[in-house]
Amino acid sequence: MIRTLVVDDDYRVAAIHAAGIDRVPGFTCVGRAHSAADARRAIAELQPQLVVLDIYLPDEDGLSVLKGLKAQDQHGPDCIVITASRDLSTVRTAMRLGAVYYLVKPFGFPQFRTQLEAYRRWREQAFRPGEADQHTVDALFGMLRGPAASATEALAPTMRNVLETVRQSPVALTASTLATRLGISRPTAQRYLSELHRRGLVELSLEYGNAGRPVHRYTVPALA
Image (cartoon, one colour):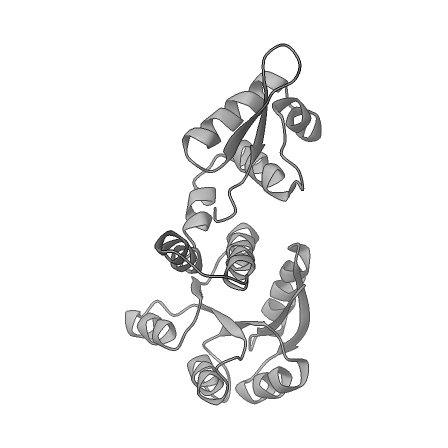
């Protein structure tokens, strides 16, 4: 579980973000803070791996918190900045200070969930042992900027459900199995899977039996 701290001066918004985090598989919200001072204390005590950090705080701005974290401990938590600020200088500063993403308020839960899932996939790949070739490096940097999120958000709702069902399955899925899980017809499931494969969002493998046509099974690529 990715231990996550929410920092937002609005108690109601912080509670909404905390509840949203707990809805995303692989994440748990370990606490909420409503000022820069509270955030520093909570980070020291709770040792989160990710901080969802607002810019506008009553005592300091969130960027000063982020700057202090990076200056004190290079192994400190990652930060996703959430803010109503659309000023490009603020965006540039957040990027220079190491924010892994920048979400502009207001945003809905689907967008929030998509970015958390992109971060989770990035962690799964970035913390593996071994060496990285250029393709892996490019994929990791791309994942930090959330391309998977934008690709997913562009999908129609049913196709997005198909993709997420395949992504969350521990084994490769067939169109028949997917149709049963989603309550749709097998031809409909196959059409969605074929389109997702055409877009490069799922991988196809063929399973050959003793006779007949091969079984088509679909998975989501590790770096997708």
